[in-house]
Length: 309
Image (cartoon, rainbow, N blue to C red):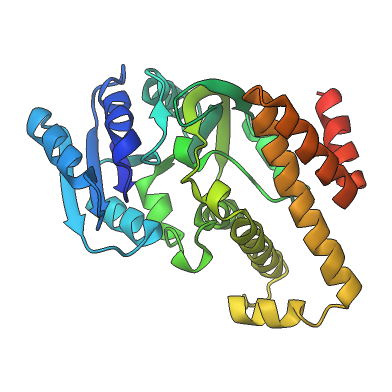
């Protein structure tokens, strides 16, 4: 087993992340870390852990981005399986042990993910990220037949090293949503992914996270990724991001306006959820009302789905 940890400027959370990996109940793994040209003290933290635990292997390079860093680490990995984690997240103690158990139970499966708890920058829990319809091979096959986009926790993913390499690894063209594109390319190649229906990770949401800092970029990239996935599924060639934007600019002004309203409604709804979980009730009220004004159908659908769970 190889735990894959690319790092860029995460000194605030990195110590806790590495500690959570080294404290796993499953002990037979190597932790390989690449500092991707950090300008903070991340490299210093990595060196300290490397000196303390011989399971830690470290690399230091100029910044090339998360995709290239991850692909390099996988190429250096000695394990047949690679377990991924982001440098600001936390493994619960039994994550690797549970994923190894599932590998033994479902021998032909190529990857295993899990559910996650949401935490804020200080580590306080405020929600759970759950993925349904992927907990058994039968559920996976049914989901694939429906031609749905597949989502799972990349920071909780354990994948066959050979399978990761065979499908081409992460593609930097799709950053910051390279994980979403990879997961769907992975299953579209005929590989099988299951999600263990247990919380085995803490997924941290904090002000410097890309989803918080640049939400419109994330939504825009997701749309680009979905477009190319859809093209691939009907045996058409992918297009570049520039082509995607050019085609989108041909939309009518009303369609473009409605899309912007929908995107901002999504962002405000998400931020309203974060506000209420942080007990910022005034902020919640303002953001949820703004979200409703921009796209009432989206908000009502979200509430209906939540109530039907």
